Image: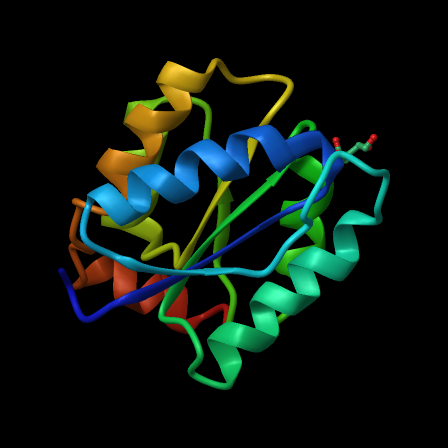
Length: 144
Ligand code: RB5
């Protein structure tokens, strides 16, 4: 068990992946805060991006995972919040680099565009890669 709480949320396009990735996170030793959605009924992805952003802001969770059909809409919505650095990734390489270079605090995946085994790889790499700091911190500071 780690001390970190990971919030996870999706729209209907990411619901099935959310259920699978939630179990993966629990197996990795994280406490998981599931912010919905809770079935395959059609919902609006900004609502779930906003819920997750609120959870990171009020300290309910430390980092997050968001999933929609493509991952695009929910990452655009999440990145409207200044404290969020949400990275839509498609493979282990981008999952690693966004942690090392961008210190991304939210992993975003597309439930209709990325295979589930690749999505699990991304999850594992993202949560096991440290930020490199240094010149990358300077660049992040310029966005704050
Ligand atoms: C929902 O149909 C779909 O538009 C959404 O999951 C996402 O792909 C939007 O970017």
